[in-house]
Image 1 (cartoon, rainbow, N blue to C red):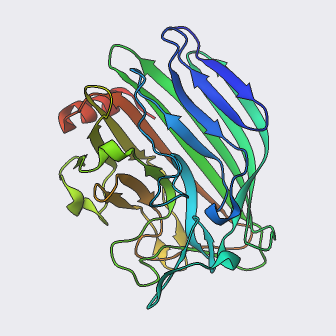
Image 2 (cartoon, rainbow, N blue to C red; image 1 turned 180 degrees about the horizontal axis):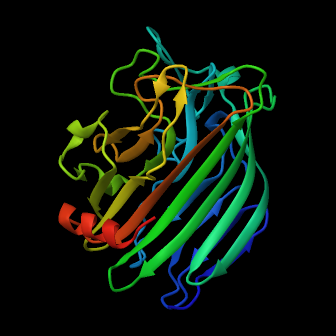
Length: 308
């Protein structure tokens, strides 16, 4: 197929366009936004090949939910997630002095060729006071755009290096006492129409998957305004793992289909992940964006035919 097209609005966003249909598949927005929302780059809108949007942006229940983004809900006492901060025994409190940010520093590569797109970016992570806590090398790729299968693939790689003189402690509301709220890391917020959507893994189904482990998780929802469904498949890279103070930290799925659609392959669901000074945490994921309500057999076949 023809090379994908890139439209770069400098200081704002990079948009990836499918050249045959003109569908804007995804926009990577890197301009800073409201401080209370823990400003950070994000992907929104994400669209299927048919042009249907499969992300939400600043919903009224959680203004800091923005498409697909890398987050850190509890990071050494700071909140790089956005909004109110969870405090055990007190609930969610407005504590602006805990809300940090992830800042865009520059792009090392923005390229479209061979039917794909690569965006390589440098970022820095900061607590509320602006101190440098971490550097990140981020790489986002768009590939496997195929009208015949009705799907395309996004890969997201983050390599986060601790620049503090002490460990960085990645946690979640669950590591701080709230059950079934282990969200942190890469986080997707689906559109309102996807509420009550179907959740599948290779051997399980339904919202009871929350907090479990599986190589991949699929979420299917039905559109408003357009007939039909879409399916997003979230998959861990085989090498995703980390050994720290508490040993190995394979990811557990945070997933909800009520009161809204959300998925996160959390790397600190039940236990904190501790990153030593100077150490680097690397995570790689892929997200398949497909038209239609896919069954697990079709998902498994697609993943097998499209290796990492």
